[in-house]
Amino acid sequence: MYCLFADVPESLYFCGKEYEEMALIKEVNGKQPQWGERCYVAENATLAGDIVMGDDCSVWFGAVLRADVDAIRLGNRVNVQDGACLHQTHGSPVVLEDDVSVGHGAVVHACTVRRGALIGMNAVVLDDAEIGEGAIVAAGAVVLSGTHVGPYEIWAGTPARFVKKASEDAAITYAQHYQEIKEWYR
Image (cartoon, rainbow, N blue to C red; front, side, top):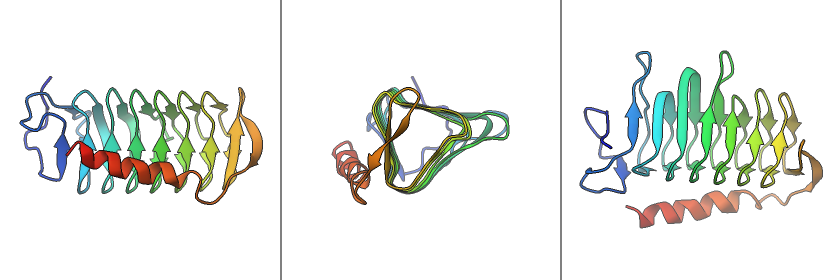
């Protein structure tokens, strides 16, 4: 698979350092993905459409970010782990603020995730939900449309419900760990 981007900026690096196998980076409806400094995108990740990533983000193996009918916005130091899917819908973008972690296989759809929050493995966050700063959505949880998870709360289950308060550094530790791992692939 080859990158559909004409020029690959030095600020973005891929697993295939010689660019033999690169991520699918696709323009959709006149909009193409953009990224900040020191971002890492695995060679089989997909970025399509109106995506803007901040600095030091990572998009891991098999992850899909599809922004065809609305935007996807990632702050700084966001990590989207293996097999995760970010998708928006008309009038509802995906917004991930700084230091957010999206776990393996998670689906984040047309919602807002505040600074330092963690979306657990195989969790689902549906349209117009808001995940508060430092909150944790447990692995396998389903956050229903329009749900508001408060700051530093842990939610679990299907449908997801409040479980307990989280410590202020519980979720952000994951984002910091992925900053280190990202550098191993440089």
